[in-house]
Image (cartoon, rainbow, N blue to C red; front, side):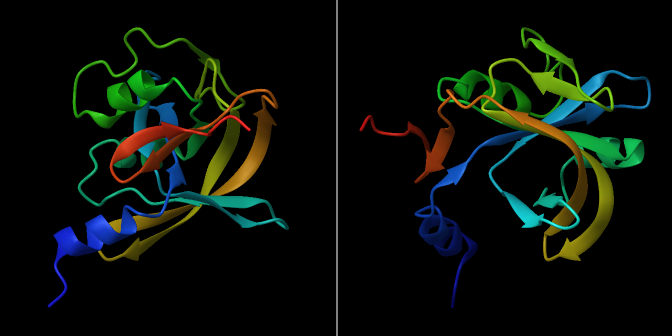
Length: 159
């Protein structure tokens, strides 16, 4: 019988980038969460997706607003990931950001950011699949990404 611990352990051998999904709550205050499940979906129209857990208290806040910004974290931004991965409190205390195209936080120092409008939300087991229509985006071509592999943060090796 396959256990969730075995599933998590084996899939932890697939390296992924780390993305901060940011948005605003009903009062306009920043809200955010860290995810490693982010992907491009379509070029025409431009779509991306991320997969928050159904137990997330942050995703419903973002969903009510209808927009989000996917911030691809850079090497050295483990502290940003940790700040957005916790429940409760002021996740943005000490984080520098500016409003993106929808007013959602674009974090300073990220590899790239993608501003989106929520296009669809699908149920998938204990997660949602959130599809976003890309409205604006930008990248820092000199920044290196933060990676997650075997439950630890990593950076690309120097060539």
